[in-house]
Image (tube, rainbow, N blue to C red):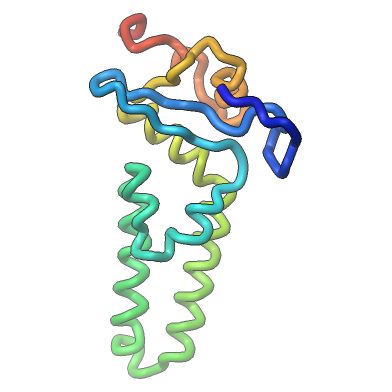
Length: 146
């Protein structure tokens, strides 16, 4: 895995990301450690970054919030200010949460969908398991798991 040359705002100062591999297709995905700027800045766009990371449930939450934002004022009897304030607070709260936990959620989601660490014996994979609370058996290659 890649080692950072300086801490540069990274969560550990040594590793910046860990790679996951789809055992069926050989596709590789990179998941960074620490704050997710992509999810923080762009998830409000109908959850598109979440769908791209295969985190569909979270993506649908943002779609639902957009529906509430569009239909809410009509349901609230025209109280646009109150509905807008609640919607903005909900969006902002979710965006901050995704900035903090988004990369961890992405990694765990990949593992649940059958992806594995591309280099399971690497220090970066070990760091990912310790940081994100992933069980050690997730480090085993797909062929070794039952």
